[in-house]
Image 1 (cartoon, rainbow, N blue to C red):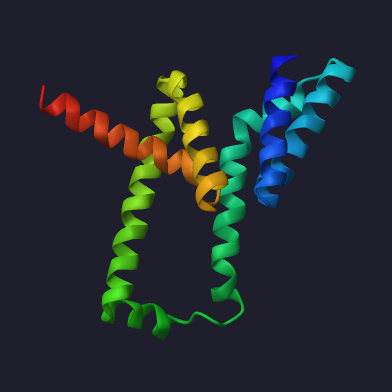
Image 2 (tube, rainbow, N blue to C red):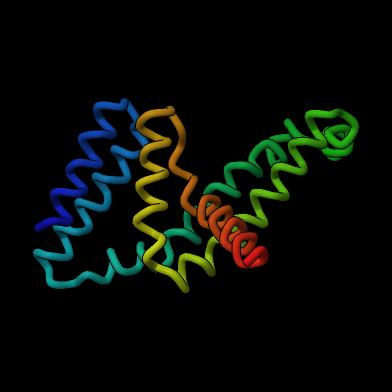
Length: 154
């Protein structure tokens, strides 16, 4: 029952904060939870928990590639992006985010106790700072790097 209350609070905060991404996500998870409870088949909820991250990354990556498909981004615009300071910073930020995300997945798999803290931090960023809920993976990567630095200096 506690999980319904927690998801309900997330849903309410999403509505209060006018963050429709969180609202839709909470509704989907609540619906899957109710379906799993009524049918006795938690397969879809388990599938989302086990594969949702990869599915989300695939959809996000596909959305990012659309400008290439529609001709908005061409080879010359890609090459020109390396010629400006903002382009160089963007490439560097993208590289760091990808590496952080790559380090975040194993951290969440080997230390599942970090997941609630990542969720709270991400939700706080969404609700109070108008962020977008793509943070847990990258936050896990940053957590990994900070922990690695702390272990290095012990």
